[in-house]
Length: 372
Image 1 (cartoon, one colour):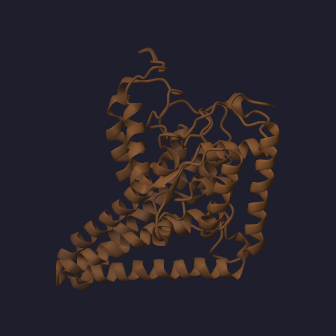
Image 2: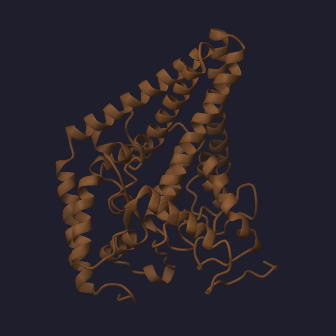
């Protein structure tokens, strides 16, 4: 099916074949090197978490120790969320047959339940990327980021909604599927495809919140108080809260830079009917943006700095995206297909500009009537 604005069928077929080859070549090399890499990152993450929690308690000697502990714990939470959790739960390391490093059993250190996230993100977002009405990740139900959505008076203040979402991003992840299924607010969806019961979804939602909040805001502060005295209870509680904020802000910013820059495209459901693999590849590229930076930067983003490659090849170990990005960029150039990549700062500026732009009615805006 030829769609307006799409490259010709021959171009898309050639494009598809070359991207398939890039993936096949990468997967043919996956092996011990990848296993060693993810295990090394996990060791660094665990050491950072342990040292961070221990050093934070030494804050009764000097605030410098407390600050260092908070920074190390924040680093551990970022690594757990991005380079480890996100990628492991995509099944990138299932081939290892490791009882712990696999998408079926891994649970990350945030209040959001892993199984809920996988249902919404792994399937819905990666299949229907930027299709309005199908991909709930586009704006997360909070932000209006294109003229495809009607303008509402509340959108005037969405720059503040974005700031709140960034600060509380793990809570947004936790609530995302619950909100989509209208568990607490609104009438239940008639077309729901939820594979578990609504009661089970609520149970999982609250159970993971209790587990995560107890660990950071009850257990570790009380342990610190027993070791170093009552004043350290509040110090460790505050340190854990700040470490979570560090992780939330970083994760949110990286994800927004990969999905909502100025040049990211949106699609409607009709655009994507009977979609070929080449057309799907094309949509992933138009709907994603990359970030450029040093190796450590890519690791801290979970290699979502290579968001284009992640959307094209979500099951390939992200460790390989930087090399694959060079090849994908070349293939895009050969086929005259845009490839959106830039520095962290330049991409983030366009994200903020996009949020601000669609806070107000624009030329093609449909304004929702008060009755709605």
